[in-house]
Length: 593
Image (cartoon, rainbow, N blue to C red; front, side, top):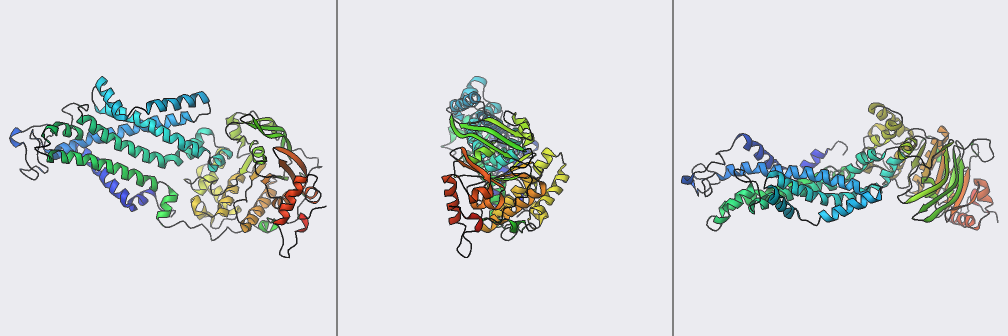
């Protein structure tokens, strides 16, 4: 499916093909009418009035003034198409601009824009156009402007909801974590992912515009003579409908078919531009390799979900005279005035692996996301977060963007949502390299292939050309690790990276993280609620509950001699789910009574 383009997918869609034919016919008719019509549409001939179709050289007959109906239809296509295109252009600019303004962090701006949209949306497009026509006179520009503005606020409302939805997705958060700035993220990740919805909305605008132009002209608010439009044809011939009903069939049918064409083409384009949808229609959604990807070296065997022996040879263990690469002091996070992380102190030395554990809602993810400044809207952090001696709290967004993906990287929990569905795997791996290393497109693409090879995906050259939906869950998580480690960060935050994976794939991912972070001497902050997982990969363990750090020590100390009752409960839960084939708990999970 990789080679299937949106154009091929569109041609395979029967409705899309019909819409393309109808809209194409409209465009051809409008273009041809500029250079040729069988008769001059403005010339009247009272001697040839009321000629029936296929008589006297008139394909569709003539009207009450002897004007050729076919020539009028060709000339009328120009006005219909012009109004549709202009109104859609105005609606797209107005709609997207208002939607982006309504999502700005400045509350008074977003609130004002939202109220403006609610006020304007109360006025129907036809009523707005009639008022403008009464004031400025009927014209193509009046109709297009009225429909464009009226439809633009509808587009803004839909686009705002879609922008809010996409901004909350993991892949947008992942792009931000990789160092993508606000407007780059909007341009490359947000707008493309709402494009399918916008295509449908704008196709509706084109339909409404062509229909509104016809209604305005029929009511006498359209472009004055000698302008020709399908609505004007209906207006001119309405006194004769009872005597010659055939006169209104041709312009009415033209309007109906143009509206149908715009709608069908819009729906088909929405599906054709979505790689996942067109991949499903083409019957190809296979993963790059069978099952999960191959293992990297012996790393996948070195660390199990239930834990191999902990390696304490890292240079960053407590007690070593090594300055911390990450030093968190007195970190407090409040959301809407409520404290969710309270006075947390935590540090990581270069190359050290620290497991941050706790139940859901304990504040461990918020603690980690505060480091690269990825807290959700409404959250405020205080205290101190120093990265290699540099204070991160209080940095501007532009400065934080330089840190993210370069010095601090994040691997997210859900591999199925952490990758942008509309960008190929290779482009997503290459993005931090281009942002932070200044590589050319070709250099970044070559490095992406090498990174894919390092994380163990089969056939790297093919994998980088794949779409995320063509990969399995374990393969997507390997891609996420490749993105995070692309720039060799000093600190890697792994936010429950194995929770959504089966046990076998968990073991492979843990081994991969262990191997790659040891190779690069990367400090690893591993977040999980599973103490059995932490026991296999961490040098040191910190336990959180209710937003506070309640216990901390080497993995061996915490596992063998926990001080807090809550930690003992976590160990008991881990022991209950970490039995070996003999039915006994693994030795390193035994709890000292």
